[in-house]
Image 1 (cartoon, rainbow, N blue to C red):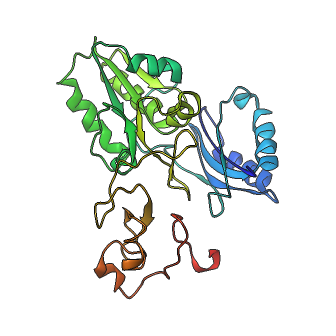
Image 2: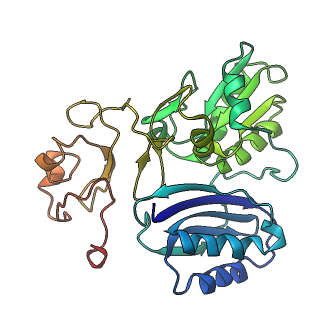
Length: 307
């Protein structure tokens, strides 16, 4: 493959995050890299794509910083750039939990994909929690996982409070997973703060699990926050487990409604998509402010100059 998609996070104290932003922007000049990078006083959360040469150059550059010398990166092959441009910006929270937690000293136990599979296959007092938004797990998740119906990460705080009254916080193993691992770092720390003792998190997230263990105990595809939107976790096509928004046929392809005043993320099959000109409903298809319908796979719509 000509291009690579890269994702990583690091919780590390950055006294001057705006200086780190400038250093990244300077490095990215004249390089074939696109992405979305958030930097705060608490660390970095990065997703990007680029040519193999550009990604290799970034890896060498960031690992030259002693703070990232041992950094693990999730890397996947892709056919093209999966972001429209490179964005590097300051964000107060790397993931919006809206609660202070100790990610440096009090998170769950990290388990490798192989150990995770072993734990899934072992009988015992345990629950598995999908720590992602509902539109993510609807197209793919681990078998038997708890699937909280939340559309944003901060809502998981109430789920933790409710869980305290349902399980033994000292004995029940709480296993959690997310796309790449960052939400598990925060959520495992929140559970530990709430008094849960047996907390485990999938190291490297679903991305790493798919690369090392394939689809064992996994159903569907993985939602990703880039132009691809949905990808198989092992690089092979997986059977869809979710349905088209309009006709209920099996479909795991997401689109943003072409009505700019709606922009709803919805799933649609190839047959229904042209019927409503890329919109989620017939009403939206007749709206005055609709983007031109172009069959562009499942890429999000772009501003006119990016077509």
